[in-house]
Length: 192
Image 1 (tube, rainbow, N blue to C red):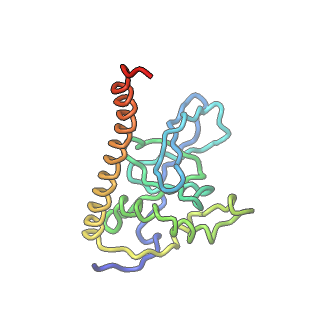
Image 2: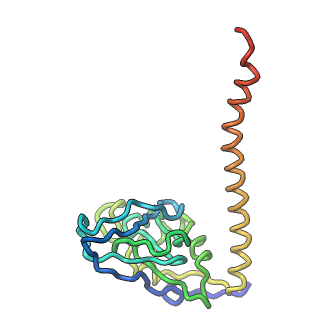
Image 3: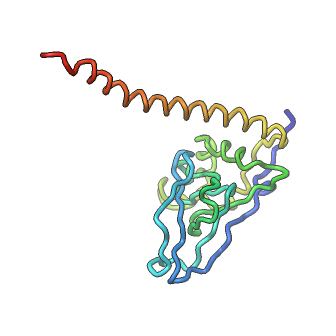
């Protein structure tokens, strides 16, 4: 497997389209779950009630993180269903250079607690829970980056395993609902 060690600044470029907040507008908003669990929809930001003067539009496949919660894995790749959502300046956003880095690859890379800990070591702020990880720290971070073809192969394997795990969880949920109903049916006519 051919790979090279590169700073992320070689394969990521700052992104996010700045938009001046208009009082009469509403802005779809997303947040990032901690522990590498992706993004979630938040209530829209109302232009007349926010103190922010600028918001940033993100696009599908952008790599994004929360400065404040990076220490606990608030990193994600924006999925297609949230293309065009907005975030504050507390959510630095990057675009992958497509000839060098696949969004899914960086998403999986940042799902690892060892990476969060390494980046949090250089965080600034008071107390462990207030240390912000600034974009410069991300861009200086060095990773072993395989060729695009190898990234595709690895993603196929990882995404396949993740799909199987999701299916198992769905089946477990279905079983958890089915068993009590089955027990109730079996013992419905039993006199105690």
